[in-house]
Image 1 (cartoon, one colour):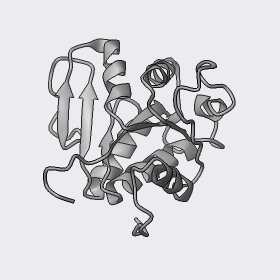
Image 2 (image 1 turned 135 degrees about the vertical axis):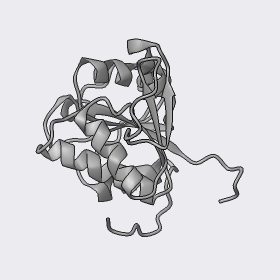
Image 3 (image 1 turned 90 degrees about the horizontal axis):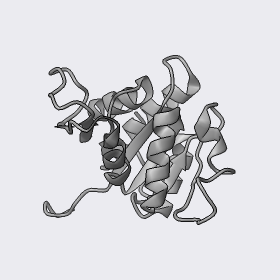
Amino acid sequence: MPPSTRRPQVSILGSAEPGSSAYERAGDAGALLARLGITVVSGCGSPATRVAAERAVAAGGIVLSIVPPDQMPPPDWPATVVVPCGMGDARNLLMALSGDACIVIGGRAGTISEVCLAWLHKRPLLPLVGCGGWSDTLPANPPDERKNSPILPWSTTAQLHTQLIELGLASSAPVNAA
């Protein structure tokens, strides 16, 4: 890739608690994105989005973290680039717009807000299914009837990789195991 070419970016939205299968899949997704050369966008505010960032950094990837307060997080924050936006919950729009696509894991009200903003701005949604949480219902219950963007569910990293290929964000080249 030429140095002036922008890398694909994927936002990680959602929440899941440590020890859950959704939490483990979030970490796997972060590592996969890093191995594919995709920049991970993560607020690192929930355990799931934080583990995705940690695993992406550990795999040598780039992580952009957009944080709600106006101050820099501590030096051990799992990111290579940090943007303290000082916008509180309005940061959700930046999270939705900063990805070429958005991975959705579990989720609560903040995730729903980000998903609706991503939908309104025509960002593809990649919900984790089969692990519980709000993302399980997204494929059958899109934000509204407009069909603004594709909703491509996944439950394994192999399926996620296939969906990223379909979106043109990854190649079909084999990915090294983490």
